[in-house]
Length: 215
Image (cartoon, rainbow, N blue to C red; front, side):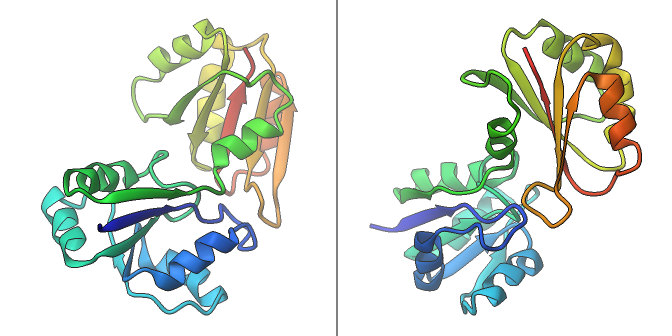
């Protein structure tokens, strides 16, 4: 049976990869990935030679199906973290099932789970909202305000302050944690109420952000 391996890759620190993932990366016929240049940094670090092909959110179903039909042992990796979580990996998996592939997960890093684990909030249940949209934020903010569980989302460096300022009135009395550049050299974690957070983040707007709002 043909097999698709969903491979979690480091979110920053290249040492955060499992031995099993390294083994599979060496064995697959082809590695499908969001950006071959990003994945090449990981492969070169571990001296792994494997054919890579780019697949991203704009790739057509026909392209994905064509690639899967070409190979028996396929790997898929996103730029960082666990594929299918806020990236196009889900489409690859869906089509693989339709083609009678066996789909295997190789667990590992996930920015959202990593952030939740160090938040200090009650996170046995949580709501994950993916990337904060450019439009329609008020609806999202109301969803966060009304949630009875911790809420998490991703935000980019050039929009983080604007988003926090717009969210202020909805979560003024809630505790917030922001993880910036998690697992990387300049990893930072900020905790407190939103006004305190804005002041802390104001001077460090580089890197990717994970925002956790307590219930």
